[in-house]
Image: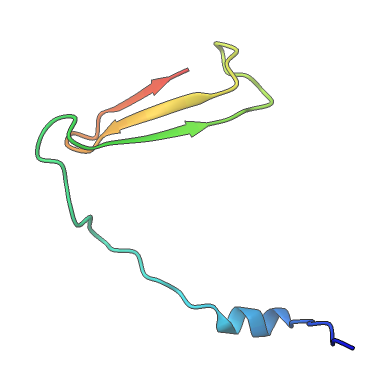
Length: 70
């Protein structure tokens, strides 16, 4: 007969380790539109003024220009 594995939350937390984030990026864009970061958000229960349940963002790494599209 197998024993059921019951783990104490403190035991599980003690086994986890933290990984530190770099304070600075290792690579930065040197040209416009060389590196683009994007994210999509949604769906939202309350629609924004355009009645779209989603929006997407594009961020240029060189000049930190942010564009949002619904």
